[in-house]
Image (cartoon, rainbow, N blue to C red; front, side):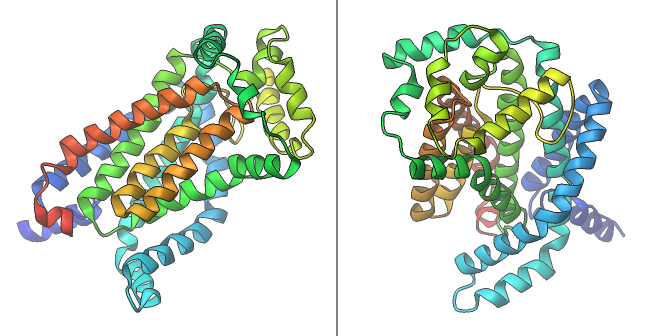
Length: 345
């Protein structure tokens, strides 16, 4: 009876079916840490949390099956050898009990993150922009957006606007779904811990402590014309309406004090950059070619965040530094003490 009971407990652990006490302990700790993060958002802002959970629930119901299919067949191509389709189908049928809980907790964590982000100006009014803009200018000699717009063309702008707004989401969600069904238990736990810490530290704690709006909102929210040149540069781009629609949407929600899908303004640090850097580290752990792609795309998103005016360059630099520390710490405490059997499983 004890053996059967432990088997059921292990099968119900949302982030792994651990093969050792080490993996099991870190998976349970992850459940508790995620629960505390989510509980904080629900307790302090229950209305926003429930509203966002309904919206994200509908989005996930439509988009996740598509991304899940892409993620599974990507795993098949990586690990399936001469039979990638069979590998992918077996992966889905054998590991759906791992995927479903991870997806559920990811959904809750994302809802909590958005809740915290929406609440930032009510907790810490925007204050950090003047010195962030000055620091950017001092470090680079001129405002970084001017360097980013040194070469402009409509096609170049279109690639940036589309990638920053849409492609980023698809690659990020696809990576999470792939990790959810990844057979390497302890490494999956390590990635999910790093993801949670990125949400909590970069997207919530530091974002509140360094409450800021970014260059694209600077003049509209704080007043003045410090970034008038950026606005003009974007106006000259044929496809800038793609990022303008997004920024106008966020500004409308902020001024109306309204919670909606993707609501909340926060510049420092950049979560966009943080998550692609996290995925670059993860892809590098798989093989060097995926790692090269991951780091190239991370550099592109860092550039795009400045080009669009959504972030100061310093926002991305801090994200890179903090995510690097998170990745090292999760490796130090979760991955390295694991047995060889855990790492190879």
